[in-house]
Amino acid sequence: MIDWREIDGNAKAWVKEAGQKIKQSFQTKLSIGTKSNPDDLVTNIDKETEKYFIKKINETYPSHKILGEEGYGNKIDTLDGVIWIIDPIDGTMNFIHQQRNFAISLAVYENGVGKIGMIYDVVHDELYHAFKGEGAYLNEIKIPQLENVPVNQSILAINATWVTENRRIDANRLRPLVKAVRGTRSYGSAAIEFAYVVTGRVDTYITMRLSPWDFAAGAILIEEVGGKVSTLEGKQLNLLGENSILVSNSSLHQDILQNYILKMKNEA
Image (cartoon, rainbow, N blue to C red; front, side):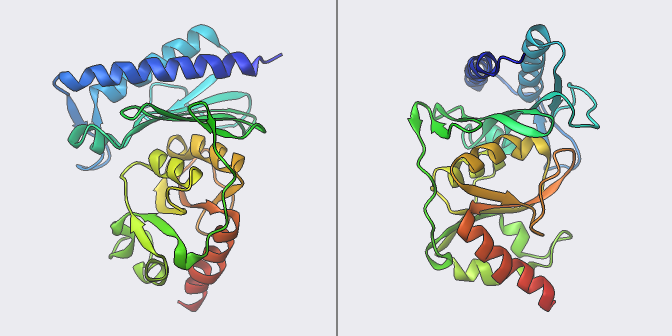
């Protein structure tokens, strides 16, 4: 019998302890490297933080599997069993350049179903967390269900990359939406942007390419406040691969999908 309350309590304690270690690193010199391209950065703190989580999980729950961004976990090719999905520092470029606008993202799934989701904004000490079926919280305060907001009164989180020439989407498909919304923002951390949709600080987040550790926790949180997340084709997210992302309240999600994204695709 899985004790999910214990898992939830341990995960919160580990996230907070990892956050303290990250804060302490602000006074040290970082070792910075690159991964897939010169802008895909990784630091010694990303690696050390992931190793910290893996050590704690393996010691406490040796039968559980771990999918981590930095590759120190397990090779996952099935969603069977209990899987921890972790991004030790989501927003590494912000971590390096700003020492803010980054977060720890942690999710626990069982047989592909999200049970526990946490996004910890380390600098602001804001823990967004959800236990399946019990709503979402910001620290100890319950986050209200999302209100319906029309497109012309909404704030869209989107990176400018996707409305300029790029290899993942015809930029013309998103420009009408960008013109229709009240304003746009970009924070440079998928976890932060998910958390901001969950709390209504922004109304929609769109991006073309996220890995499971970027969205696993956010997907659990958004469902607990009545929102919806899918690919830009309106399909269910793949927890074992990369996805495009559209996340917002349910009404706005449907409006944007049908009247902007899919409409522009069909007219192309």
